[in-house]
Length: 114
Image (tube, rainbow, N blue to C red; front, side, top):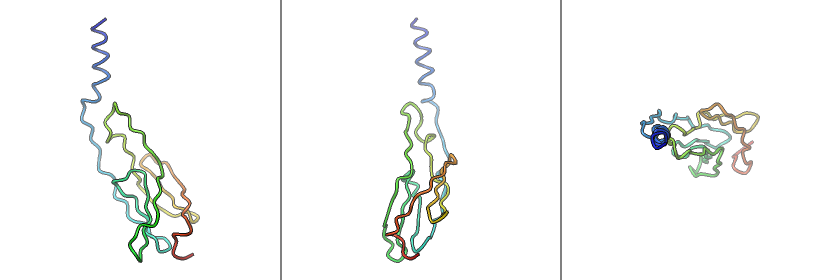
């Protein structure tokens, strides 16, 4: 019985001993739209920010998605970053590493012109 528990415990802990490595997050080029620069900062997973080009001030940010990290696995292999920003039908199109697409309504108050 103790032998089985030891084997089970080792099997559960073994993945934590392996060193997880992931490639660095992709570098996303800023997207310029109606006087606003949209970025996906790599240090804030799942967020987009909007910056006024004229003043270089952040005017808006949005949490697009949340990743729940399993504490029993290496955190870095669970990270999911934004890989693409675009505009579709006047909305911000965000695509993550898993291929999920998010259509975000851009607040009209932040846009410089129509």
